[in-house]
Length: 454
Image (cartoon, rainbow, N blue to C red):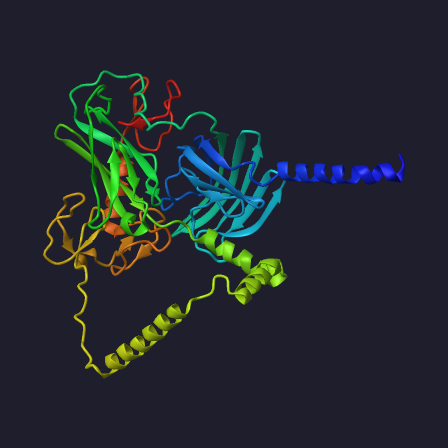
């Protein structure tokens, strides 16, 4: 082919290259997805002494609707599952990213705790995208030393995300009750569970309740009513059995309670609405700072200089006058405050009573806990045993209220010991054949079914 003919083909080739580049853009994973359940396998090691937390061999966490947005090489997950392809997928606050790699449609993140951390943890998280599916794989190792116990464990977990192509799913209907394995007697209580115990503003958590008889058998067809209790000055809505937090953090933040009622039986569960993790914003600011240092923002900065030079977007003269008046007024107020006599503010009221069941604090004058109706006792009765976090088992003095590691409500150590004894005394039974077993067993020796509370 002659050079003359090649000159005619050059614009066509350039156009095809640009078209291919546009079609392989960075938004191919944007949109609505459905997250399947997170399937977890735990393998324990070490001596796993009495201070180690309860860790079942298998676990499952619910999924739900997820929105995925793509920026550059990385994906952001929001909704029922939250995370990013360039950060750690662990709830432990002390864990830090050790490395992250993006290769095509595969992302790998390695994380670990700093040297000397009280609860060492390392994790590798792998995310792969292909077509209308995204898979998540996790491998986490723990090596904790709690009091005299050495707790080692390996956790593997997996989840699948499927792109939503149909119409938006409706409000979730109650899950069908399992086929009865026993004949229920008269109602003796009600049990409630939550699909999510902590959500961000604007998100939703759904409760599921069932009425049971004295043996724990489900009473089928029992009518259950749901109600919502909100902290003072906070907002949210309850639609059936699902609670939706307010969109504003100032209005949504706090602990809300969903109560299920059947006749004279009531049972409540707590949903905590809290702010989103700020690590995304921190990472974004860090990237922008690095980009400026590398000169990648030179074009936008030069455009900004040109706009200011031409007067576009400038501040009008009356705005400058208003700013000047505000500054003068501020100086006057500060000067007057310096001349005003010092006023000693009244000392704040401190909680003096505590609920020994849930650990919540109250002021003088209160007599019973508003959450579990137990009688309040003076904070001084906590005694030398102090308080303990029921999640990570970290001990604290009586002046603390919540755990610094995971934010859980602290309870008196004496209450924790009583709960442990009660748990260890609970009998288990096989849901298939009904045979009872002592605490500590996992499976039925007759048919291999997983044991449940008797």
